[in-house]
Length: 263
Ligand code: PAF
Image 1: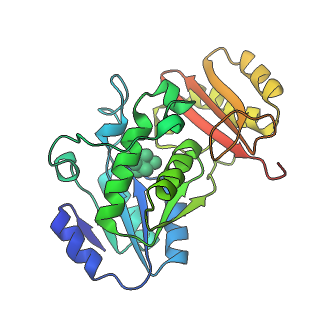
Image 2: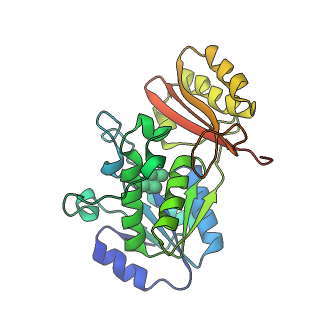
Image 3: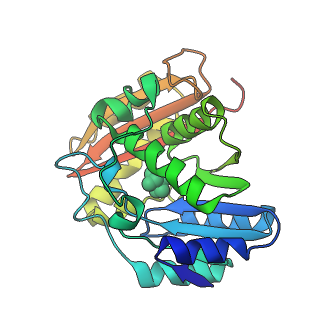
């Protein structure tokens, strides 16, 4: 496995990769959910590139950029075990050699739900995703269903900007008790982790009113939204194909979602 920190190292490693190339983009702090993305990439492509980059552009003022977990050695072990050929681990000055004056806009998808709470977040995500697609030149890119709005914005960017890549969504990986895996789960105390189960329990009701009622019994959890919507546009829709939830547990903001198969 080649670990490339510089653009030139990535470029020469990329040139040597045979066949259909997959990319899995991450911000590190890898867990079983990322391992599943790498596993799917491995199964569906000839070569796998993983990127590990905590993207400053997608963090707002007061968010957790500085305390975002950085666990490079453990991350590389997961990449190696998953069979990745190349891991790109740039620093911010490699990805942004100068100020990113021009950015990709997520348009209306960037202003609702997660975008309403995190202004500019999806513009930052799309900007780095497009840059990493240019740098890694994959045929196929894997993203987690867990970040459903990010997935919708990336799909829309790829379509609207004619980016030559196939986007594949990988189902959310959960702990046995239902908690969706997230790098931010490690911020939770034992009591907060227990309380956080209300997110998956609320989704399991498949009913927005019943789900919201469950949050009343968890005073330590602040519900931001629980809505049914169209998974492509993120417009609220009573017959939408996705239920999304976001809540703050202690000081940790968590999101989750449930695709509705029969809608
Ligand atoms: O999902 C993430 O980890 C990040 O938003 C991504 C796609 C790697 C872009 O920084």
